[in-house]
Amino acid sequence: MNVVVVGRPNVGKSSLFNRLLGRKRALVLDTPGVTRDRIVEPAQFWVRAKPYSLNLIDTGGLGEGQFQEEIRLQVETALKEADLVLFVVDIKAGLTESDRSVFLELRRAGLTDSMPVILVLNKADSDAAEEGMNEFYALGLEHLMPVSAEHALQIDDLKEKIVDLLYSPDLDEADEGNEAAAEEAPPTIPRIPRIAIVGQPNVGKSTLLNAICGEKRSIVSPIAGTTVDPIDLTLNWHGKDFVVVDTAGIRRKNKTEQGIEVLSVVQTRKTLERADLAFLVLDGEVGVYDQDEKIAGLIEEAGCSVILVMNKWDTQVDNDEFSQKLAEEEIRKKIRFLGYAPIVFTTATRGIGLERLFRIADGVLEQRGLKVSTRELTEFIRDESEVHNPDNAKFYFVHQSGRNPPTFVAHVSDPRKVHFSLSRHLVRALRDRYGFSGSPIRFHFLKTRNTGEKK
Image (cartoon, one colour):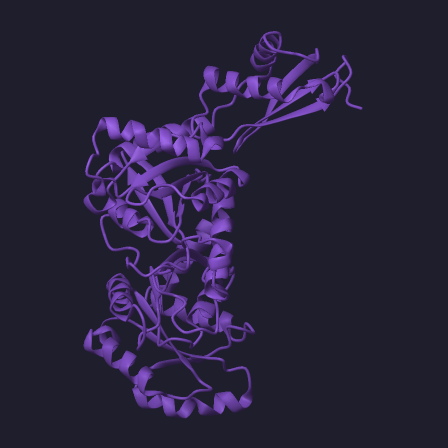
């Protein structure tokens, strides 16, 4: 079941979306036009002690302003998938001409007759505000709900109304099915790998996402900062599921504007922390900049695996295999610390390189999840420590403490004797032996007695 949130700008659609979802997913700011792409998130409502699963879809505000044609197309796409519409208005502002225009669009599309539409009177946080309900009855909608998304007032009543309308008239049967499901032990759901698309503005991140999913899922514009909220997309590639997340472009700090752009960068950082793999998109038209190196640093700091995606490769006059090798050398010089990251050349506008990109991504994710036994690891690291060990550090045993990213702990006689060159050699040896392509490797050294007892 899909529940779509629509309305003019600045009526609190994203605040309501976050409140119904139960977490801050969409950016909320007093500036109109913050939400531009449609955001789709699975949600679970508990109504009368029973769980109901549905998809919440947030959309951009319909009205005047930048990206209006693109936003309108996103809203139209969302409404085609809708089972129920939440038409949000500002009860304090009263019924405006913009509200009437949105309602007329819903009616022209036949939605007011073909599916339930709830008129959500947001910002009803006082008795005086609720007195303004009467003028909204002029729209002729059957279902009106005063709420306050900011103060969580009447949100549970709204959830109950949504469930009743979606599952009625077979509510009893649905209740029985949900009750049985609630009593059963929840099935184990395999975790779907998350891939974040990151990079500077206008390198083709949203175009890449659209090419991957085969539709205009994100708004594409030459204007920097078009994407604000992270956009999630679940896709299946050769029988394997992935969640791909488009993020806002990260500019240099001194060029980052206050407000929306700062919040977008924070959202991108959080996305990286939750991601397993990042596609760092580089601009094949202009080359690699210092800012690309800084974004690469954010990815490694987050412990994310990474693939360097040189997009817009078709803009190069010479884009043959020899030119690719020269470009790879240049990328390695500029971003030296990501020497373990594969490089893929793509042209997102024409879908070139996407098959290879996901083939490599699948391999990176598989190697990221590799688990090495303690016995095998200890023997291997001991042997490798004899190859290069300038300060004669003694290795007692080694174990793998994590896989996201691959993390190893070596119990040694004295961590101070583990020379940086030895640490670097061990990481290189691990890559030569086990791969871990595209993933940062964490190596920690603990002081331990020969008995294995930690100090």
